Length: 201
Length: 251
Image (cartoon, rainbow over all chains, first blue to last red; front, top):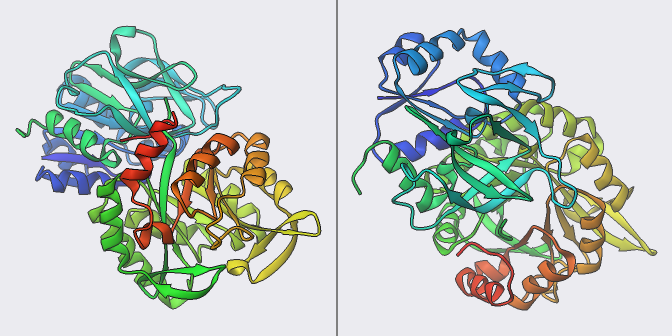
């Protein structure tokens, strides 16, 4: 059972739809017992970092998620804001502490000749192939104005060229996260989800 | 490298897609959900649905349509039409929309752009602008082009960017329905002026027009309706053509 964390930040319906399509049992929830009972935690989300942390706090989810992911080592998938929140610190719209599971911070794009948000389909470079091995294409859908800067390069699973090598994905132990939206990235996105959830093609 | 996006637009009226020629003489162009799935399969990068007769009582129909589109679609899609407040946007987001497009409501109340951006993030907020050339100026029009405003297109778009619009969907009413090509001059000018993505709209008739708008105006995305609905341009052919012209596309 996958617990898709419901904390009032964005399009959880799309994530659920992708999981349903793959016949992965899931529940959209902020209920502590349901989250404790799940084998896998999925943190989706779009919107601002500070609002995301505030919403997690209001639902008393910060300690609970830390316990499930960092202590019990449940498999974790973070998507978009769900990837950014696992860092130590964000600045959107003001400086704010994150979940702090991965060392590093989230900063705004400072690009002279490129648009912000980074929006659309972009081609990634995979550094850690664990969850990317079944992708036939490497085009994924991005939509973000902030990007993560992990302290340890070893945590970077993929980068994407948008003026420089932007971190597109993070992986460390049971934690996997993507800045792009696999649920909006057609077959390539489905391939990642299949691999992550251990579904044989 | 970031791909240029090809975006079919489905104008929806009473749950069916239609396309206006210069915004009048609507013709039926099919079931939106079916069309959406077809386009996703063909390689459309995103979809835009514009509810062109969004009245209060029809919102529920639209929400149901959004839900069924979301169930069938695994590419991003934008919903526009009749969004006047945060609650409208929230209902569409919860139904599965990735972005919302606002037009008249933003002109009447520019604060709406800022409120939406703060609540849902700038990436969620597309500002649609219908523009027409009048006496040497580009003037914003509302209500599907029927209502002229006093706003100059350039300054309105700049203001919207500052307020937090994440993307601009710019329709040239002079070019829309003509099939003579996009308004590359205006699009190029606006593109240089702002740092958020622009979707070019109005005037697509053949594949060369897409090549032209990406090369000349440098926009991020190009939108069209009838040429796709009636099969005059097939998305896989269009993308091959763009690729041959060294325009980055997702194939």
